[in-house]
Length: 83
Image (cartoon, helix red, strand yellow):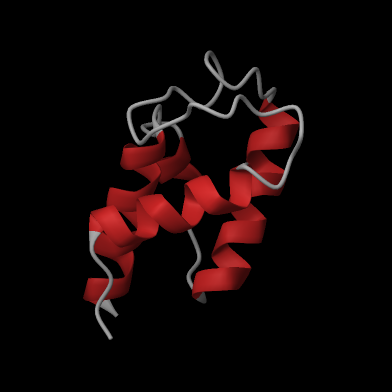
């Protein structure tokens, strides 16, 4: 099964909504650090959780370019498509 940015973004949002501190009205355009009030450690922990779920590893240099949920989803889809 090949994931799309939309499906991966939906999975990320689903995982985020498990946390009661995360706003309920988030979407793919939400900025992870600004809108969700995640610090760098929380971002790293969350990305590791997503990596485990999707069996992918996001290189640290790619994380620097990720601002929104959709950015993270697009990065994961790109990494998975490259195999």
